[in-house]
Image 1 (cartoon, rainbow, N blue to C red):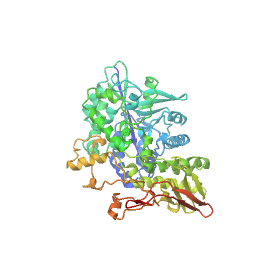
Image 2: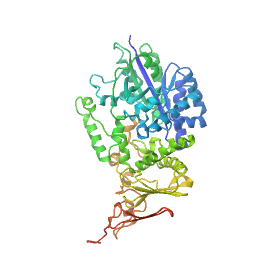
Image 3: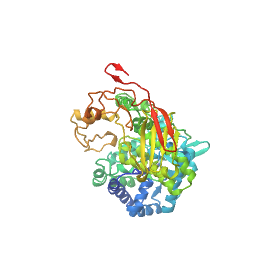
Image 4: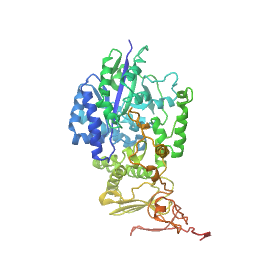
Length: 555
């Protein structure tokens, strides 16, 4: 009788700079109860990935978690998975940093648990073929990517509605195994009843060969997502699920990824397109395009054989968050500016601080706060400024820092770093107070988001989200206060400093706050000329000859 092998990978992560009480709540409601329950069932095998942020936290605050994992590793119940130590999007950072971050995690796992990791958790499952070579260089043999990406590569979804094997890919001759994460399982576990999960597994029993179903997803969905703590632990979903899987061991078995590689060869060679999970493709689109995309997906529910069509529908690409949010791009390009200099320093402590600045969470925004959370952006800047003040010489630099083909000016003095953008109103977009590692201009412009439309509909319909039956996080609408839609105002320019405004005489504070006023000049975002740079005195003078309207007259 053939067997169904269930390959499970749990990914735990908290952002650099997150509040300690938030991390502690996640520990008490998700990480701790999950690992304690799984410890009771040594025959249930799975892979575990924790980001370096969490490993550091467990070492300092909850060493009991480390001890439990040590036992589970020793008895071969848990396979520890590597990744970039501080959870960077690998394709968004320089190649040498990719290898460095992964090796940092490898070294930690070896020194703490005595294991050489074979697998890698791909941050936010953002795949680019170019990362293969770097992953292999870091001595990794396999990773996990969403099945949606495999279908986008051309696997026939009609013939294979679930992918039950693993594959092999290569880049410049460097070979890597890739496991397809089942979207069905991601939406079933832990939301569907246990019986339905077992029935799903059983559909694959009567095949002529052993098959594998892979599920890799966030550990936070087991206790932190809305209502999941009650559902998963208090109502006993996880305990029941584990016991049901083990009771069906004649045909259903859990193994680690490395064990399955020994059991069965890969199905075929494949080259995957640049992508992530399906929802990420929605979030990285411009808001107006995202609304159209969401409507298309919604309308597809009424189309026969919509799954066939869906195989060929893709959203955007993660790096477009750097286009969608200039503030994210400013952080990202500052990181790139410092990367090579950090490597040249060969300073391990400085490198560790720098790697923290590559944590992905503050560079984008989806269903969680991400970029919109000021303390996450502040943590990125804190680490970047800490590094910059140690390796960047105090002088005036002229370079295209944000990579838009227009030169910016960096005035780096003993106490401050000042980034000036002549091409955007002669503005200052970053002002760093070096003593405190603070960017005083770490603010966001107010932008329209696609979910604002859902907020308006939610409030207009006096709706209440029904989460008695736990759903996926993507479908839940929750508001923290009433009347939020009345606070939706949007800026027409970046919220940089030293922008010159010529306001209409009727403008009041409320008009300016709401960004609903008359602008009488063409100075605010237009290009200024560099008149003078005195490098000795750290002096920069910019000027612009423009227009001002008074009534119908232009001056």
